[in-house]
Picture (spheres, rainbow, N blue to C red):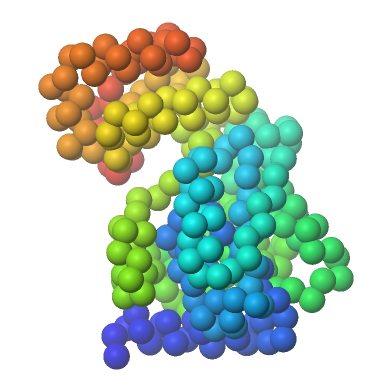
Length: 269
């Protein structure tokens, strides 16, 4: 019995104890953590007692939504997509240090409202053991709204999550990179606008179509800063035609300057 397997068994017990005879509502982004949580919740309770809820807003990545739908269907879990309104919240669009708190609060309030105040349901979030409360203001929103974090409670880390997904046969999902919302591409303190989010979405869509796999499009006003992994950096550096195409297309969608970050993706760039 591996450590991950021991934690999985503990996770199953926690899910059953929290849900008892209730419906489990899993906040499901389509990322690795919430995917494992949804899978284990279905395994523990049966798909009839599990509902996955995916939040959709201008900060969402469209590919993530379609992948979430496919994964939920694979498990037989019902999926509800709820439109959330964080971009109408002044504290969110101000983009201060507590942006993620306001986002979490708005999203979970919207999810809870779907089921009514007196619903007999328990709500799960995919936070896991490596997530540091000091770096994640959203923890406070979870506590305030009574949202449970079974992965974290069971002691599962990101490594455990990936191991268990691979064990279950989801090899591609197990190595999937993190896909935080588009607001994370905007420097703290710079206002979040719908126009900026649209530019980021279109720019990242172009990069994906050109074959790049690990990247971020950091946006500083009308300046684009493309961050790539080593392979992507080599690819773009050696292809002048591609660089010209990217500059041309980025300027069409509203960027005035297009730059390439010399630091590698994943290094904090």
